[in-house]
Image 1 (cartoon, rainbow, N blue to C red):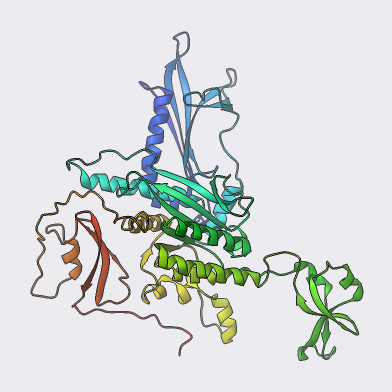
Image 2: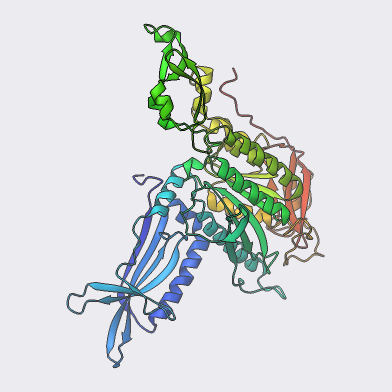
Length: 539
């Protein structure tokens, strides 16, 4: 309870017994395998505990060049300090022969033994700062979603191979090169190009990637366009540069007929202020002795007006100097041009809705145009701590003149958006959200022109539907999914219900029949209970 949510955690293990029968290279390879399994199986717990580094120190018995026995200290580190989530590395420690204190750490690996460093620990850097900012709003740093996607993909493959165990012709191992990503960057001519850059160096609060994933449906690989707000850049607000990148990335997805996934964590359109002008203007009050009566205009003295850059303000002459009619400023992206960009990307999302598959995942919060973009897409997955709203509760309380709302969740939290049909699925955390994204994509063709995404299935196509309705009221979902003792209509384990919080008398979802993805609609004949959240502002 004393650990704050934005804290960074580390796990350290020091093994005192000396290891025999293994070389440092073998120890390093075993560590890499263990870390991969930990990331796959315990990703949700590691994220919840904010684990950014796992370290183990072991001592391995070996021999020197002359054949004499010696002990080699090996330090194994999985760190997120350089950007990639829990990236593994292994070092041999070379101590001082007199003091025994480690002088340098040399990387273990083919051709890398000559690479030595004084300290394997990266100090807290800009990436750690950005992670803390994202965690503070209840989300995950945008670039870390790539690591979560890879972990989710590994989990998907492990479940798939487990279900197919023993089936003839079934794959037995996860294919190599499972996950690749290239960032969509704006080139000198303004067009998007595929490339990579150092994590955390982006100046625009919007990032996009072309991700290639080898999935059970497409073991040869499929491409998906991911677009995400970077909440660490001006609170994830939408300015002209952000709007342009979103527009071009979405257009790229449409032109290549690829699925488009939008990861939303933002604070709406950016409305800036010309801070340099604040201390320079004066106020012409209606009555100087009683400012509460209001004012006539804001004005600049002649000397101040002439010192301002040309075109930064529109004025008219008054006895005191120059009355301000419009404040334009000298910086681009602080005014109504941002609202124009919001309309542009809303129109692009509407076009994408008609032409390709669009899925949005709300993490942290999504405000204003961010909420519009999510709603204009085809499908929505919402995290429990990720409200969707047009205006914050503080502004509404001021408008109403009293404290009516006390949280953003009362306006657009899952308890509001799930029952009203806006949100299709609610998840507990970002790892679960990424897993839901991958599962939904598994029902979607790789392009709009491709056949359905079919996967090999261990459930025989010609088997009987063993589950039978009962004379008493029953759950229609069991007819589709089956039970542990009786198989249902769809392949075992493939049924997934959506929109369960809305339209309680109707059951909808997706499943597979012989590996082929299908949609299903069933009728709920039992009595149902639906809770409609009360609006505190509605007496």
